[in-house]
Length: 191
Image (tube, rainbow, N blue to C red):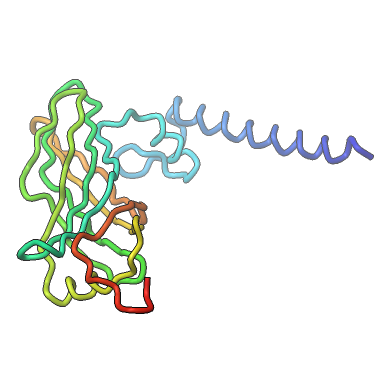
């Protein structure tokens, strides 16, 4: 019968909505078991509680660039830092804990050179960078030659609002496109 699959789907949707309503009711009334810092202990309630809190800070990946022409060669990762608060905040630490370009070994600890202040309800470009060791530069010099390369980035950030510290992340496996400046000329028979 045609009604059996429809009835099963309707029952499944109704159960799902009922569980969501129950979790949101538990969060509002505070009847769930509470873990550290008042966050609900059950996974579903925790997800709903996290989504109901407004963002204070957001970091949006823009691109990366690896400059082999400079002395010393360096890698940089560009972010757009957004302050959603009504007060200015200062990014005290922004660390790309791991950078993995397709076909190359991972790089670690690409950091923010200095603290950066972001005015209230504004955004700002942020650039994390570090010098490359000679061995790292040689690996990137022999990387595949594409117009746009893709990398995976792990990051963590700490910011200060007055005397209060907030954290953003750690975020794992964020994709970002970029390029390598100063690649060696391709040998005959390669791209």
